[in-house]
Structure formats: structure tokens, C-alpha cells
Length: 187
Image 1 (cartoon, rainbow, N blue to C red):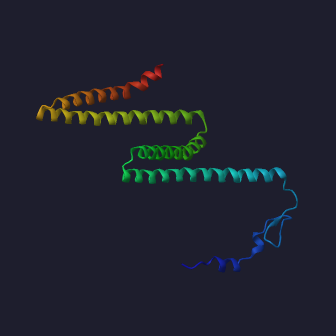
Image 2 (cartoon, one colour; image 1 turned 180 degrees about the vertical axis):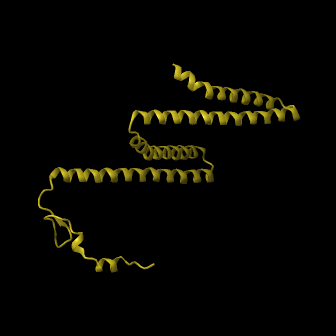
Image 3 (cartoon, rainbow, N blue to C red; image 1 turned 45 degrees about the horizontal axis):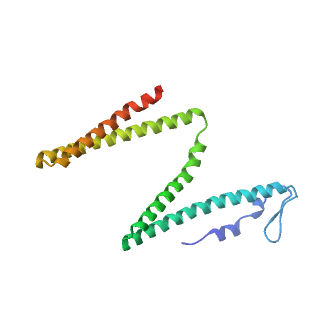
């Protein structure tokens, strides 16, 4: 692929891109100002650069920790070392969670403009969690029916115990998903 930018830049009139006012360009390509640039502007520019660079470096550090966790997990599985596998799982989990929080929290905070936005976000989160609980409860009931079918086939006592536990927990989960938000709203 050919790069046409040098050809285009030589044919362009560079005088139209110079800043308006009394600024001039020095021999080394820097813009020489009229002296209106203050010391506080310099400090704020440097702090902004350091803040964005520091945040970028921190995110890269967390990414490096995640990659180290992946490598440690692979080595722990090869050498069958449970302690290193636990360390690797913990490192991978917390680096992933912190990376998602560092990327997500500023977006969430900056997207809220009024109190109604916060209320809508909490209402949406509550309804989503309730729907997920109902869905998992229905899956639990279907799994409990599979355990009951296994118990009727071979009369294994563990299958009946698992059927009762899965059914009871699934029904309780569905009830809490339906009535929990209503009860807490009344309190």
C-alpha cells in the first residue's frame, strides 16, 4: 500500500494552517507565543498528561497481572500444583474485575445527569436481577424433574434427595424474585 501523505503535504499551502494572531513558528518547528502562556497552564497541562498516562499505565499493569495469572494457571495445570492454581485463579479474577470496574465506573458516573437517571438505573438493575433469578429458578425446577425421573428409574435415594433440594431452592428463588422487590419497596 502506498503512502500518499508526503505527496499531499508538499502540494498543500502551509500558510493556511498557521495559527491566527501573533504566534510564529521557530526554526525547530515549535510555536512561539506572545507570552500569554502562564505557569498554571503549564502545570495543568503536565498534570493532565500525567493523569492520563498514569491511568493508561495502571490499566496496562492490570493487563500484565492477568497475563501472569494465565501463565501461572497453565503452569499449575501442567505441574498439578493446587496452590499455584488457586493463586492464578485469584489473580485472574481480581485483575478482570478491577479492569472492568476501572473502565465501567467512569462511564456509569458520567452518564448520570439527574436523579431520575439514577432511579432508572437501579430499577433496571433490580428488574434484571429478578428476571435472571426467575430464569435460574425455572432451570432448577427442570433439573429437579430430571432427578425425579432418575429416581423413578433406578430408585436411588440420592436422586430423590437432590430432587427435593433443587425443587425447594428453585421455588424459594422464584418466590423471592417475584415478591422480594415488592416487600423491600414497602419497607
